[in-house]
Length: 118
Image (cartoon, rainbow, N blue to C red):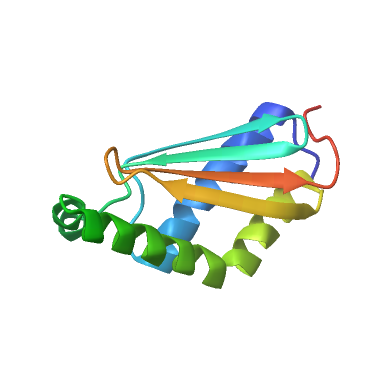
């Protein structure tokens, strides 16, 4: 199926929320995907559990949350790349992610092998 840009963004948003639910057992409160040139940028808000919010009050807890998040993404990387590849019909070249322990927002940036902005 050929998607228009807005349709691709909607499909990516839905797929990323579903991945979060299936992989982590819970989904974000808000999600949005944007395509910009050769990048897919996904913002997930409200991803921290109550326990993670408590942990984030201390420096060690924040570091632990970030490390855990990074490890989970690395273990699920193949599945994430497949989701993005299937919707954009382009290949993921690199994946960058970070989580804010202050706001509970997680950002994913998928860099693709070509421009998919059209």
